[in-house]
Amino acid sequence: MNRAQLEGLMVPRVGLTVDIHPRDLPIALIGTAGGAFALWSDAPAGAAIPVALLIVLDIRVRRWRRRN
Image 1 (cartoon, rainbow, N blue to C red):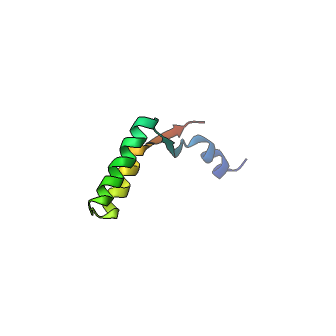
Image 2: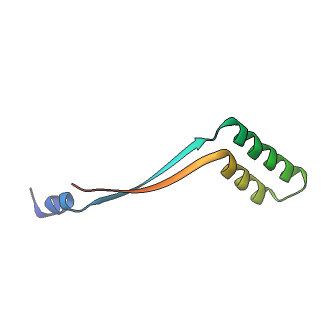
Image 3: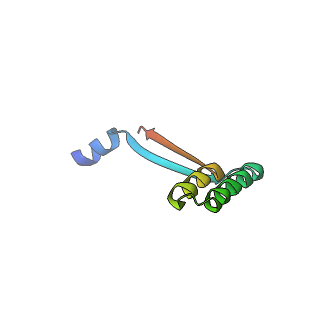
């Protein structure tokens, strides 16, 4: 085993995990209705759609570190 392989084993590994899951049905319906209402009332789609997706989807971003 050379030095680069040995150092690779000693350095902690860092990663990023993004989990996206739909929320429960009542909250998803509220987010969909809110987004539809915003688009119906002539709100810009660039603002209405991301906010509705944040309400409908459960998005979790996790950093993790694995030590060898």
